Length: 407
Image (cartoon, rainbow, N blue to C red; front, top):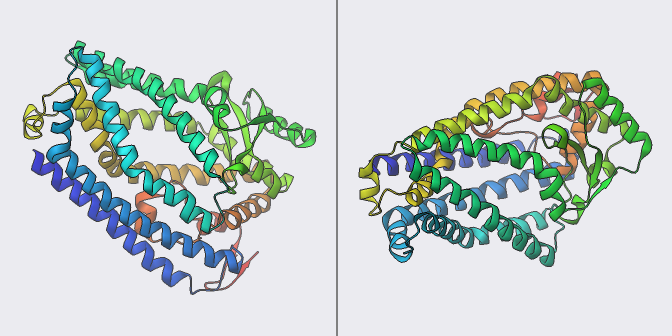
């Protein structure tokens, strides 16, 4: 069983690395074409950023494998022998949190390089060292409290029920829904300043858009994203009565009113088409499949890892192997998501116009330095949104291969 899992992980690693190599080669060729969508300078920067990001992905993927191999050969058994607490629930929490803490420390250099190396170099990251450290400390304390409580409850469920994986799935799903509800109200303000939108004209137009779609919101807010990053974004946060519209200050500064309304119209398209409920259902299905799988792992696997089959070891194996399961399932969910994005674009076009949405997407791509081309394998494995060129073609924009964008 252990040999089979190692084989699956190696295949997972090889596919990821092969896709990264193919993407690098594809972008190197595509960057020689005349710039489309992006300005020539940003086209070159976007290509360079994507190539650098893929190279980092190659290194981090290989390191992930070393880390994985270390855990299954001696790491888990060593940690199991070190942590000795009579209370099984407390022992499970300490075991899982120690596993997460060790991974966090070992992977921190990649996060630092991404934030202060790569993103700084290409003009994305605006975060300073103090803010980064404060963010990390807040995240650690918040996860220590909420994560500790979650793993305590999960260990109690595992110990109490024979079919714990079903009850564990239900509990986890409820927790995820609750986090989504409190996220814009409780969690976001811990890291960012949310202020009611000051532009009354824009606010009135947004509220009219929401009313037309039948969506009730608890407010329209501006988020000070620029203190950390220059990328543009907006989202509908929360569930139920906690729903609110959040606009990055970078987005407000860069988009015209009609473009911003078209972007929000796209997001409202997801609401109107029940995509949010579909996403919740698909996430529930993925979570259910994972719990069903990890809830029925044979005792022989734990014996080969030299650990007892316990709440702690089950939860750690879940954390260790769930990225592989997600990777296997993601192409299907990505395909459905890309279909939903086209439909949301259609709705956004009706809310404003095709020209307004297309113009907004072009500005978003240019400001975010999103390279407009990707290898088909990358799209199939990772993309939740259709390629930008395809979205713009649907909106009436035409491209001459290797030539500048034309309306």
